[in-house]
Each structure stands twice: as structure tokens, then as C-alpha cells.
Length: 255
Length: 176
Image (cartoon, rainbow over all chains, first blue to last red; front, side, top):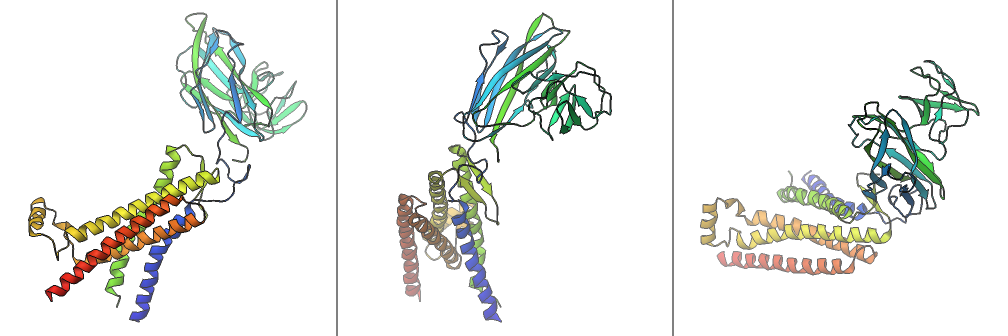
């Protein structure tokens, strides 16, 4: 009995020596990493994969940029735009993103950083889109309706994505050439109100929606980042600046 | 019922076992952050599996993290040797005992029973890690100079340990 107990102890002692050594041996993997898919996220996106170009020419003095960094797939910037009293200003193509890699890239805009608190604006919407940013509703939409008429397809929206109508985010169930079928609307919306693909929405001191939907940018393609700012009626002067911190996050498609 | 030696060895081996594992993980994370290396982690079994973007990076991280682990083990063993040389109750200088008493550090005093159990455990880890580094070097996943350094340090440390054991045996024979 004593011999058996001591044998067991010896085995435990042997294990106590060998297990850490084997664990250390196994801890760093030396498997060959293929270019795509296996080690998801192991190589982050950088400027050699995705060119992010702020539009410093089209907006003259009305928009300016202060890019911090593009590291680990995250592009950080503080963009300053001009807000006009009672007007909705659209900065289409604030940034142009070019996928110069061989693989598709997932993109998201994040505005959940520090929301501007000054009352120079009523609302800011930030999202992707190559054509017009958002489409106006052609008819009133009553609360509870699921059928949204479209004159033109809403760019960048697929089944399962969300769209923004006013301050309401609603899921898309089906897309036809003339309509979007969504979950029932919680609010009534007037004709002329704009709907967007899921976008960042900020109001003074509040982050209404912190992230845009995911945009998949195919290799060799480009997409624009757009910003709309609705100027406050209470502006002290006709136009004032508002600074929006933002991040554009890029990931490989299978990460 | 149980062997006292085995129980003692088990007790002494717990701390180095945990220390060695934690050191490897900590060293990998330090290098990842210091050099901004892209990495991913999978935990298929209870062993975390770090994957890097290419073979060169993996060899770099593996070599330096192995070196860290070896250094931690060699410092642990060096501490055991220091206690064996200077604080062993069979040959400690009386003046040092008085100094330890005045500093309230008599806990540093050690007996043959304690020090040689510790010594056996730490020297075992020392040579196991050296052997692991050797195997990694043969497989081409560890820098050669790390193995040379580890081997030389292990041989030196072992020589000191054997020298202390021999001195202890001579002292023991002379007192009989």
C-alpha cells in the first residue's frame, strides 16, 4: 500500500515537472499561416491595405481634419465641420476609402468617443455611401407600418442590416425594387424625412447611435464617408464650427 | 504512509511550476506589446496557443520568452545556492547569525533538509528548461545563442551546487 501511494506521488511529482515544460513548449504556435482565413485578425489592417484620404480640397474652409493615427486597423481623427443656422449641410465624401489589398475589408464608423456638447448643431449623421447620402421618404409613414416606398434603392443596405429613419433604427427584412420591408415602425415619419443606412447619430451631449453598420469594401473598390450636420436655430453667428471625434475601424472579412 | 521526501518535493515544486508558466505568458505579452506584434490566441486545451503573423516573429517571441523563463529559473536556483552557501546552519558564520538576529531575518537560515529539497527541485527545472531550449534550437524555433547561454549557465550553476554538496559531505564526515 505504501509502495502504491509513493508511486502515485512520484507520478504526480513527475507531472508537476513535465506539465509546465510541455505547456511552455506548446504555447507559441509555429503553424504556417495562410494569407486569409486561418489566423483571423492576426495581421491588422494598415495603410498598405486601406487608403483613407481626407477630402481637404472640396470643402475649402468649411471642413478640416486632425488625423491622429492609423494603427491596428483603427483610423482616428477629429474632423471639424461648419454648421449653418437652421440648415442641413451635407459633407459628401468627407473621406474616401480605397481598398488596395487583395481581400475584402469590413469597415465601421464609430462615433462613441466624445460627443460635442456645444449647441451649434441639432444633429450629426455620419455614414458610408458612394451616391447620395440618404434618401428622402416619398410618403408619410405611420407608426406600425412595415412597407417603406423607395424611389431609388438605398445604397449599402442588405437584408438583415438596419436603416435609420429620423431617430429610429429599424431592421430590414426584405428588399424589392420599389420598397423596403422592415420591422414595424415605432414612430410616425413625415414625407421628406431622410432615411439612411445605419449611421452614427450624435446630438449635443448625446450619442444616439454609436456605430454605423458594417460596410464590406471589396478589393479595388472605394467608398465615401459622409457627414450631415443640421445647424441649430440658436447659433450665435450664421455659421460655426463643430468638432467630431471619430474612428474608422477596418478588419479582414473573416475576423 | 507517504514518503516524506516525496511530499516535501511536491510541496517545493508547486511554486516553480506556476512561476514558470506565468513567466512564459507574461514574457510573450511583454514582447507583443513592446514591439506591437499582431497576435491571436486560441485556447483549445488548457494551454493557451499564441499565433503570430509569420515564422520569424514566432521564433523571436519564443526565443526571448524562453530566455525569460530560463532567467527566472536560474535566479530562483541562484537564491537557493546563496542560501546554501551563506545561510546554511551547518556552516554559517556566527557573526552573520548575530547580524541576522539584529535585523530580524532569521527566517533566512536554512537546514540541509530544506535547502537540498529546494535545490533538487530548482536544478531539475533548470535542466528541463535547458533541455527544452535545446530541443527548440534543434527544431529551428529558438536562437542558438539562447541555448548556448542556457547551457553554460546551467553547467556553472550545477557545478556550484555539487561543490556545496561536496563541502557539506566533507563537513559531515569530519564531525562524525
